[in-house]
Image (cartoon, rainbow, N blue to C red; front, side, top):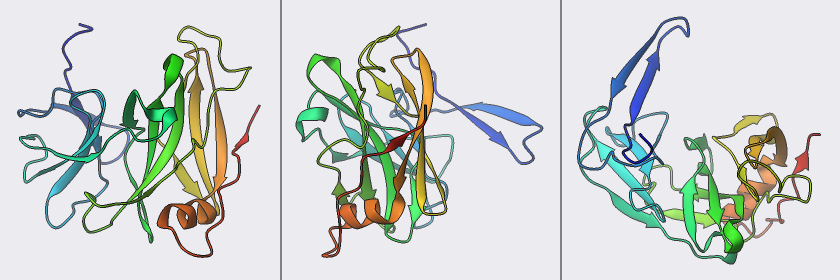
Length: 202
């Protein structure tokens, strides 16, 4: 109804038939819920954003009930100083769980960045981008909700992280980032180089 969040889980085994289940528990009333693609240490795991500003981690023995949360990340850099949240489910890599994030800065400018979380303990943040991977340019600022780029998740194809994104609720596009360079930057390896500016498809 625009005020109360009603989170639901969509499930399928064949992508022809789907079931919808309502999630329950003290910590499900938020929009930023993103399920990890597998159990961690025998428990279901999910990212969340109960307060609208920070990123939390939840564990549960029951996929449909979530009762507790743990704070793992707060807004830190200028481009995310107002609000921080995830953009879809974490992506498993050898270096850790790659999480695309959105940050809201001054003038309600939405930008996209990334986190790297420990594979066995995702409450541990290995690294995060100090500058956004993607920000709205002059051709993306105008729209129904101006000054925004936003994604619901990415995927890895070969050497590239592909980031589909919407621009100001007006149109959509995608950007690519070299996954090896991004993971090197996030993990803080000595040979790390800054991730290049994403190539944006017209």
